[in-house]
Length: 246
Ligand SMILES: NC(=O)c1ccc[n+]([C@@H]2O[C@H](COP(=O)([O-])OP(=O)(O)OC[C@H]3O[C@@H](n4cnc5c(N)ncnc54)[C@H](OP(=O)(O)O)[C@@H]3O)[C@@H](O)[C@H]2O)c1
Image: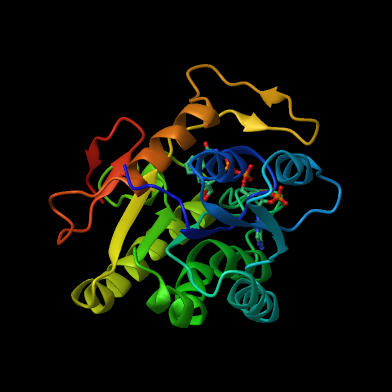
């Protein structure tokens, strides 16, 4: 596994759950971690930062270009480079959930917002962080996707909005891969599993057969810090290390 000493990462959507556990995993390995937050009312990141001085919470709503550029400038001043970008923030539900012909009709504003956060932000982040990534040694890009992104595997109904955004993310990552792999960048497209949700007080909303986000984040960190023999191939890989069709 790649040692973190002197290395720098940015993790988006790190206020709670999976993103927060990725920050912790990297911090424990000695990484300097910039952790994107959007919520004032959650204090999990503050607690983590007081335990690990190498954790730096940064205000980062990924749907706001100004936030992304401000975070980039902050990382430039503090660390001067970025080795690993973890694009994890997502909007998973909310109003107008996508029941066709239902009481809550699908509307464009919700569609646009979800595409911005779940699909486009990952690409925009890479674009704006590129100068810092160029100065990093590792040049690794992680994107948290989902099994529902797969055109072949997605057989459920509902969640049409969320599913579409993750499929679009996959294609965006494919385009980044085509352009940046020849320049030395490596990619992780990760399917974390259907996870138990972590609530604001740190307790879990448990669902039968759901994956523990702590375990899934541990697997993600292992995968993002371990070189693969087939880096020239873009693969969607799950928390067991199994490759999925997408
Ligand atoms: N949970 C699952 O079963 C599952 C399954 C497959 C894939 N995934 C993916 O795994 C990742 C983590 O999911 P999770 O379960 O940890 O979900 P989560 O608890 O909702 O975490 C996503 C994080 O992103 C944040 N976020 C939302 N909008 C944002 C924005 N505009 N800018 C920055 N951050 C924003 C969320 O903040 P809020 O607290 O304000 O929402 C939250 O902290 C996501 O990419 C998700 O799509 C999850």
